[in-house]
Length: 275
Image 1 (spheres, rainbow, N blue to C red):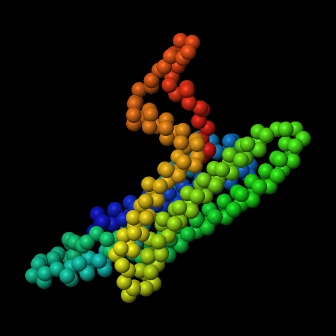
Image 2 (cartoon, one colour; image 1 turned 90 degrees about the vertical axis):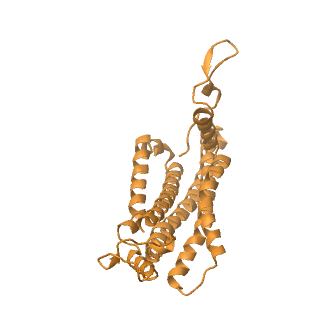
Image 3 (cartoon, rainbow, N blue to C red; image 1 turned 45 degrees about the vertical axis):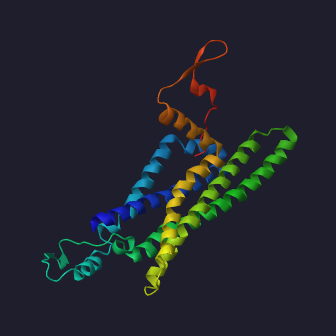
């Protein structure tokens, strides 16, 4: 039982970390647009690492709640033991069979009340609504700042701030697409969980369940493609990681036209991460 429950909780931890990461990125983009002058002072490397650590700790706490009690061990183990041969000898502890053998399904080990009331309503739906409000606010603030910059640029011809803000807007658009894909991929699973809790007699076709599960897991495969396609900084970073750590671990040197030796990385543009 606990082996199956641990696998289910591990999926919950990863899913929750994705949601918190998207929320943190949305807040980060809002600060970059709202207070661009103070942004670099606030969001340092140390601050980012601390935030990431806190998000992962919260993800583990939320995802492992079923493992520490909010689960279906009593009902599932009793049901599995009642279906066994009556001639078999079972040892009970606290009214439960010592060896609980059951088919490993998510619904068999995780309480749907936890999945719907706590996980979906509080830990998924609420952050998504907050993200929606943040991105709406980002585009509203960015549009106002663009108008102000355009008025200033008419007189002095300074387009640097205008270009930086346009870059932030493009990043916000790309990240909003990623949030939208997350909703599309994960919403069917949570809808099925709600149907399981509120309409217990309703029979769900296995094909629909499998499609919803595959769709939710496909989100993790789609995200890197969207990041690489939409955001140039991520694309450059992916290329650098592939060239250094997967294709060749040594730092290749090349001879420039004047005969000096330079590192291969110097032929690429300087990476200035958005996130």
